[in-house]
Image (cartoon, rainbow, N blue to C red):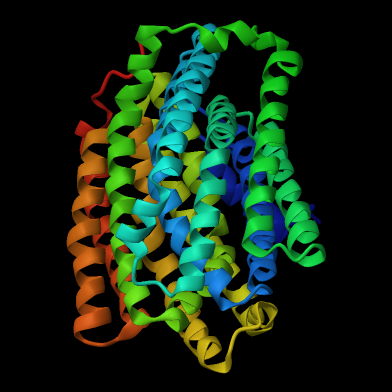
Length: 467
């Protein structure tokens, strides 16, 4: 009898499917997986640690939770002034790696650290000096305990800005090179230090938001130092020296800012819209603020695959474009989107049943718990339907240099969609915080359509980012 060939099992079929969809002439399946898996692990650990950190803050009361959530919307706005430089560095480094020019890739890293840390230092000092006025302008309607805790947390955050800028620039640059494993280790180090510091200062010492702020500064300072030591001492192949961080290279700064400025402008106004939305939530009361903060914390679990894919897309598409193969970049970006949706559905199926148990960690009132579960279900449904094309696609477009278009469209949909609809749904129609979140999900849908159409054309890759 002729010998029958054994049919491949489920693992074999899965690997075959992935290999067919994640292999191009510019990047291999194994390279793509080596980039993505550490990012997925990193995002998973960060999300779990974030939940524990948030639950520790909640032990200090709903005022503390509301204060941290309120100021974090402002933090996200402010940090984009220097995080944009890290984004630009990721794209430029990825394209130089695709072009096989490691020397200029390494020089880009030192230049990005110089500019991001300098911007962060100046910004932090300015905000500390004006902290009282800024808080009064944006969150003057908050209850006094929320306001007081919020100012403490804002000052602590500002002190940590230069350390965070250096750390994020190193992590972004390593991702651009495809070295996602060391970036994962450094990221986890930062967050474990933060978790341990919070446990000691909040749970054991009872310092509340002050303890959270001290832990934030110390963990980011240690992690930033570790990341620089890694670049200088461990990665000797890059030939980066400490004095390189103080030498300005105008041509490389121009390449970094070509991506960084439009992206930073987008994120500044994007998060400005989030701050305005946060003022709507403040007007809805402390219960809505707390429900929003807790729901955002728990739903970080559902964003894990998408966040990892978003970071991987920048590296993969950037390397494809740097190698002169934008068609490979388009193919990879479409397949990354598709595979991410499958993962997002899997994560929702796994984690939704555990959401009520996780919610108990936050010690919320029954009223708040009911609202939180409604928000979780709304967000969990929206993520696989709309989120991937809305956020992963523009990340890939930026990696090709299409930063101006993506920024303009993101700003348009944010302000006309999320801000205006959030105000109408939440305050005018009295749908409360549920209406604000519904507006966010609908905005994802509109963004996804726009960026999907952009990817079909050719204008997105006709930009010269590197020399």
